[in-house]
Length: 233
Image (cartoon, rainbow, N blue to C red; front, side):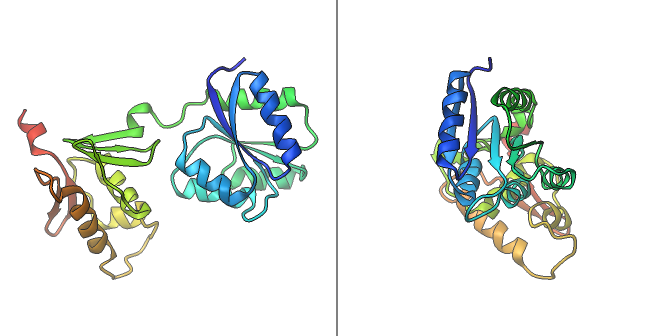
């Protein structure tokens, strides 16, 4: 029996979802429920789960689109896809969309439970990579929050990704090309000032009313986030 595991069930059939929630609870697994793809995407993006159990056919956003969007947002929670579409091509499509396992309907709950347990034992990102700190600036990927001196700093999704990438590479120069590829998913230079605008907005949020400055522009090279006090210590 797996204990303290927390999963998200994304299933529009309320009777089936209630059955799964009850069966998982009896197996010692805590579960949340989303009844459509958009709700599932929001809950999976905003909360930490060990495994997602996602029905393929969902209202508002289908299961494969949900998974693809999570992977695009760099959320790698293991996903078990449930579907009445059980042909080889269907399973391959689901796995290529970012799913980790695929279970055709109808299924035995004992098999579903075993597959969820296996996925739950998989290591996600290392614990140290879920939390970044530069000086008194902290970024928590699990709660999707940023704090400085204990004060929460609200960021837009792109600003969060930008800060996350800079903090992941703290103390190193991050070039415009690196930012375009890893934050904007561009593999070409759009010849706009989009990076400068976002860096300026981010700098104003994480440095206004705070000392010392952390985010610097390295002329002709790119950007760097660094706390010199850490180096001097």
